Image (tube, rainbow, N blue to C red):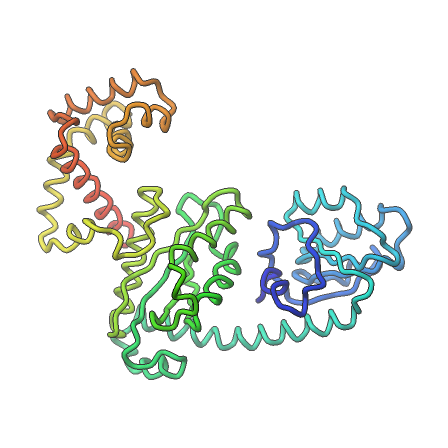
Length: 396
């Protein structure tokens, strides 16, 4: 299924001017229908984009408003108003409704033929349907390469047919919404696909639970002069326009010429996502950027790092548990802000005296001096170990 966002970026639809409901451009579209009166609304199907000339509407805006509201109730994808003959302008009340409901409304000037719009839309949707069939095949291929490689090694030949020759440096990018988000990844799917299609010559994509997973070839980048971080930044900016905040996390695993490492790259991308969510740091985007975490994860005897974490933070966790306090969380903020009382106070919305009290309390509970660099390093490592252990528990 295609989104309105995907439709309006095509040159055939440059005559459509968005006037309201910008935050609803993610809506899916399956067809187009000409509706000229409220009585015809029952013939409107969900996910259709509706167009009207206003030929059967009265000169007031009342019937046009009712038509648009009823189309929204019928779960239409959006609405196109053919202005210039029967409808001279669109009332502000309609734009207000569309913005409140995230219901895209477009104007199309009278000199553009509706017949041409219908034809272009049918052709666009037909091409998307054909592409969707190929996409299902691609999804199955990528799923087996990530999750069932030992059973489906022979599928490597299928990669070559899809533009991934032997020796290609393959890597996985995973996109998802935070665990605290009320939105699914589908809300931002068209934004992500649009930017990735601009960046990569080709890729495989897989929808897996609340994840969008991409397999890319490192050598096949259209915009090699633009860093990956810039592409991610543009996606985040578009997400903020829709949702008002960064409601998306993107992680990239390492690249390898061995197809058997595709699964490993996927798990690395999940590690990035987990760490970004733990630290609320959208600037970590690649597995190679996670630094000391890789050293800790490579320790063969995990009991060693677990014991270290318990020695450093155990008393603090015990105190928080018994007294319903938040000293572990406070310690994270303290270390992130490098001990700056003013920054911690501003970030946590607490008085500087409270900040100083909590610092002294932590020093007492852990029997440490938080002004010492070596102490801060050890505590940072203990918290990093906690992040790693919590990720492993989440993956079980």
